[in-house]
Image 1 (cartoon, chains in turn yellow, brown):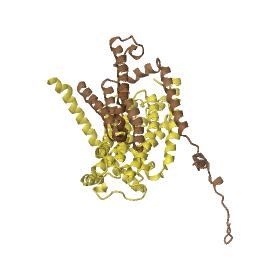
Image 2 (cartoon, helix red, strand yellow):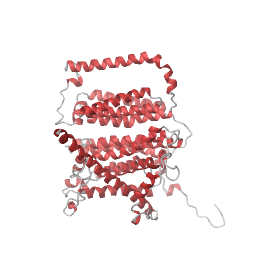
Image 3 (cartoon, helix red, strand yellow):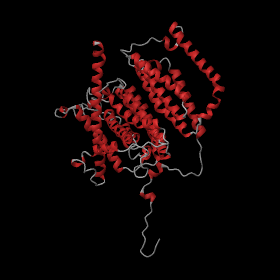
Image 4 (cartoon, one colour):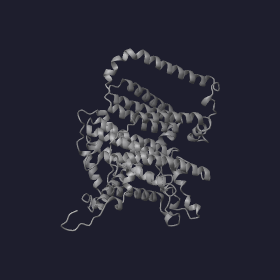
Length: 348
Length: 203
């Protein structure tokens, strides 16, 4: 009995505690990311944005949450009920479970697994099922068509994202997320004799991959300018047309958690994770988690700005960009980077 | 603890595999197939083959099964109609299943009773998982000993891909297409002509 407590119960409870803490932080961040998104969009259009609930509208997301939860959940009579209910749950759970392996600071990770980045890639490729199942189960042609478009878009951009991740893995020599960040501690900058700084991170040597990953991340999360499945001004809500109340909230949550995940991934793969901007006193006294949050928020800010001032792509242009531009380019980058690493002897 | 999870994953895999052939709705059948894939990935994970498990999810669940779902959703498959000849085809299906089962048993049986008698993977020494990671172990054997098989598999897939493209590619004449390069290469000098029009004259 004692052995059971020490080997299973105590570590089990500790993991549960860590996961709950991570989830609570994640959901709080999601609430404010949502608020920031609306505020940034409003500022670009010279509007005020949400400013009524709480001081400066800070509690707006929580008011929205209450509103969603208190509404009546409507399940269409002709829908496939089990699939209809499971779809939003899959969407939200898959998005949130990726954060189990995401390190936010040195050692601050629920499960520091060896194949972290592959786990994230695998689980986030499951998110597409929430969309397909939701669209199909609604038994409505609008929801169904939107879900097909959305799923096709996500699958297309996943391919080039996979290749870009491989490029980073070749440079880092590990699939462990902490290892990827630590491998950016020295690089181009330190080769030139400078102290460890932002010049070492992978965004500089892998600049085309960095840009492609950023754009693919926007397309993967169905954000503007690639938000064709749910073009807000003309298509109501894409695959979520028939959803209301908490089930709609779960879809919405899954989408925003996926956006945060993409910001964190860009930060870890290309912007040195929690490494300080320049490794000199004062700057390296700042805690890891602050650097990580700042960088991830910077990436999100860029996504929000893109949303505000880039016009929407047409569907065929979107597919062309994914298959005819990003796929060959990222494939070429894999070959070039592998060759460079092999023949210069930089691969360790 | 491992045993509990093994029985959990194994039960769900078998149950959902049964549901694949017994579900009334084709889309539900494909969804159960996906559940079976995910649970067999769990079984791989329990055996310490975490790379294969994640690859199974990325490739089969994340890509292949999505295409399955696409096709099944868009085709109007009536399973009740298909099931009419179920008893008629049952003997053939059972025979195929039995042959596959017997072959699997023979391969695994030789492996268990006389390791080394057959070549291939069973003859390889199993590397110590403590010093080599999963990926290194697979890479070491896949890109050295089995490089030709690996390349041939790749070539077969390439041929299949080219075949699919050739079958579906139609060049329709008289369709206006957007040429992005031409559009980007345009500049004000070539694209517009400015004319000075005197007032009251027209062009």
